[in-house]
Amino acid sequence: MSIIIFKPKQVTKKFLTVLPERIRVVVSERFGLGPDGTRKTLESIGQKYGVTRERIRQIEDFGLKNIQKSDVYKNEQAVFDNLKEALMTYSGGVAPESDFFNHITKDEATQNHLHLLLVLGEPFEKNKEDEKFVHRWVVEKSISEAVHDALERLVADLKEDDLITEEELLERFFGHLESVPKEYRNETIARRWLQLSKMIDTNPLGEWGVASSPNVNARGMRDYAFLVIRRHGSPMHFTEVAKAITKLFGKQAHTATCHNELIKDERFVLVGRGLYALSEWGYARGIVRDVISDILKEHGALSKEDIIDKVTQERYVKPNTILVNLQNGNYFKKTDEGDYTLA
Image 1 (cartoon, one colour):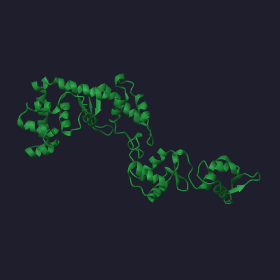
Image 2 (cartoon, rainbow, N blue to C red; image 1 turned 90 degrees about the horizontal axis):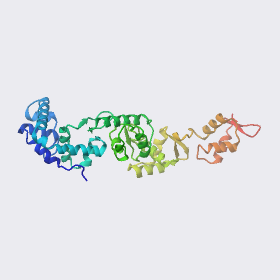
Image 3 (spheres, rainbow, N blue to C red; image 1 turned 120 degrees about the vertical axis):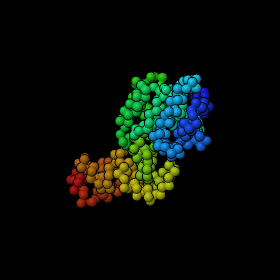
Image 4 (cartoon, one colour; image 1 turned 135 degrees about the vertical axis):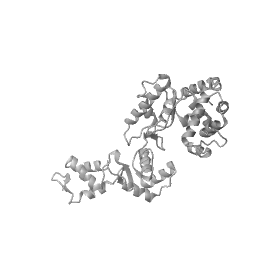
């Protein structure tokens, strides 16, 4: 259900009647109020009239100011009061432009008329898109500043490779929103505030992280494989990884290609025949012989039972494979006590 009680097109039609024809056309074309709903650039309108883009900007500004000075504008104060109330209810007075527009109406033509009303309304301020945030509309500056600061601190708490649930993200976010009025500190509005930031995002599995991380914006087979194995929570065979990539992401993944990509990426560790785990889980790298060597370097001489126990925590191999490796006299030797140590 719409959260405004007026019809944007009807209101803007009244406002445009106070302008001379040429100025009315310029304002209409700049805001996309014409039949095709296309917003024209200063340059394209300037070419149409044979004047500079700066001249068109001046005409646009003149037209907007004349609307604001008119009696028609003053008589429509209830429209701006309703629009302010809608913005406060929707997001506590600071909202991503596209999200707010889509919440009111899905019709792009009507959204253009709504845009003009926000530009004309005195309570509303547009913050243009920058490196950190999307286009957003503000009606309560103090809340806006608090939200922007909270979002920056939220991002600062995240490491490049972190992936967290929405529940955990919201919990952290609320921890930075102490100065925001309590009436606006709820999950619905907080989710809308998260959409303000270009610094954080969700991956296709609904996990949140730094937007620039490959764990969030997956760009290739390796990134998709990482998300698949991480979600699985334990080592997977490369054939199963390929199938899961196709199922979860709709990306065609050939098993041979998948295997080759996993071998090349340090995020993955081969822990058995075709089985891959994530290196962040603590699995040691190298072949079984290397794993045995590392264990003996760390613990000293060990019995074959202890070696088998520790190696099988790192590799999905049969005990006999480990025993065969221990027989390699170039790397290991048996002590007088029957334990094994490095040669």
